[in-house]
Length: 427
Image (tube, rainbow, N blue to C red; front, top):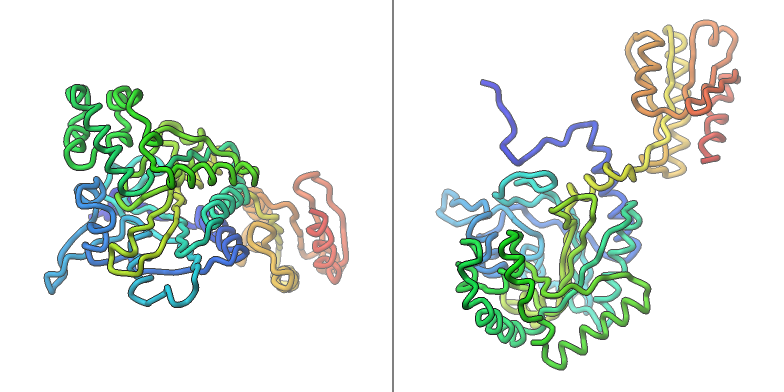
């Protein structure tokens, strides 16, 4: 029997792991710079953590969660999203006592039993942020920093779509208007949306079926249902974003598929992904902590899909390439000298605290031909190749070949590491 990975749960092989590590390392560096702290929660939670927070009637809870009973008949669920577990941890460990404003981030796998498609798998990975107890400018700063993060990852041409759901009273008022609007249009909706009208009519606005999109195109505007306080807050957010030169697109009736959102919501899209163009989303959830038994505290967060970001970076060729130095050797003595050069370069790189995207050193430990080693250097996009053979060792020389310009020169083996350091410092 030939075993395969479970459908929708893919292996990340050595050729791609570097991209993932680069993405994770850069995200952590940016979050650390902003003073965010990392949190790691279990991938398994009690099912009620999600059903109570996301919503009993949501598609995630009713159709997509991986839920099972353990040996003690407890209902457990593989986490389908990151916010609910972090809120649970925030309450359980009394983290409200740590700071009046707590800024957390996470990176890890999530699980949903959806139809696998490009950039949307059953095991997928997210980078997310949750901010508890923020002040009046926490929201605008979080969105500004999100834009900074995306640009630091090499993303361009993305759009931040912005809307407000208002408070619970506003949402209830708008839900009533939507039911009234859809009353004589129900036959034109998909079967799922016919059910949503009764369970949670706002989710009709999030449907991707073309028939439903056409129906809701002329639906009432949720902003018309905002109370004065919520309307003023949304207007201030837009003004602050403009003042900070953060581009956004106010998007009529943008909603989220999770019940806990109130107030500001947003979605980030990118044209390189086609129809399924969302790379992330988030918003306020001021009632969730209290609803799950914690203190009455405001909160704001978002999540980004790592698979989708990587797809965009590959399509737009925005991934940085490491400056690879390849040491090619022929013969036992040459291999010994080559290993010493590698060790010297690695020590220098570590001392410089260079990351993988800056430079790396490679050498084949086996007895392979020079032609084979040069092919490997080309495959790894080596910028510089050090060539050492018996003649070079006898003359205490090494050949430095620039793989971009195709120029090569002979240098002393004793100075080769220093010469390479100079070349790397130029770029």
